[in-house]
Length: 357
Image 1 (tube, rainbow, N blue to C red):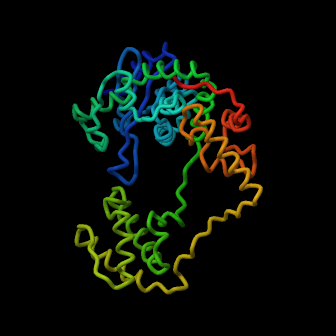
Image 2: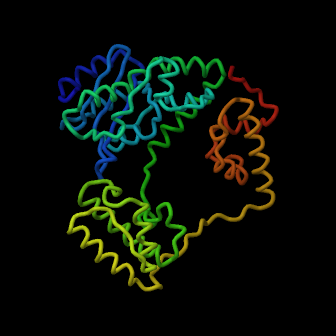
Image 3: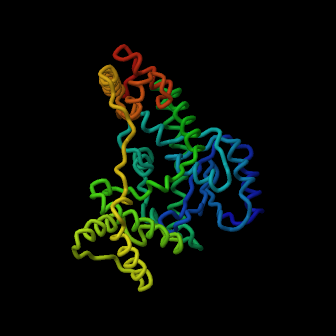
């Protein structure tokens, strides 16, 4: 565990001659409202290292070292966003083993499944939901963290060989570049719509009004407590309570302190008296009904996508997800599709495809 500037400087010196390193991160999103980066795992051909972002020293030299190398990650989006948020880090070259596995036609894409397939090693998932902000880390957590990067470099070599054999390396490179660009785009929560959680659309307008109030109450409680909102009350609970409360039916609540229960009861009583004119207005998608020509183009693209995907031995969604097909039926040059995806769809049944053995 590297927890001081000197140890970090020594690590960076060892990274200097290397062009490719494996990387992963751990955060505490399951244990706090204000998610923070808690651990950075780095593996090279020589060693496996853990870096402690909570030790109170600058990680900027490490981020600069990362930017000069190809980073091998599995499911890179979350990790790149965490690093960008924590230190404005922007990757320049990545090898995402999950994307590679998808383009090779694998059915099981999890890291544990890939490690078991290629190395015959069964990885433990015991620390998957651990609180990574705690110190010191247990031996079990350390082993789990190291295993997240320990096999990535040899796995990348295997997958690269397969991608090149299948003539899909260009597809992979473009997909990784798309991942880098996507991770740099901020994801802002729309506070006016955040309360529309699963199950809310089925509620009547008055129940939606109650749900909206309860959602903002729960969010404020979670912020003050610095815990994820589900620690205060689950989505299922607030949807159920909102529905039963407007009908005057009895309902149960999760355990909570006397202060929180009193606050909840006051908020619920106020929510039940919100006038009809202030109830939520049903949302409209804003999407226009597709024309007959667009519908026909969509069906043609979908049929082409399905046939090409079957020939390639790939999941339909990686050749082109439905949302991208809908956009392409309006604008064939939609940015939702990458160049290689457009080429496959344009070539259709005459596409020269390479079958996975």
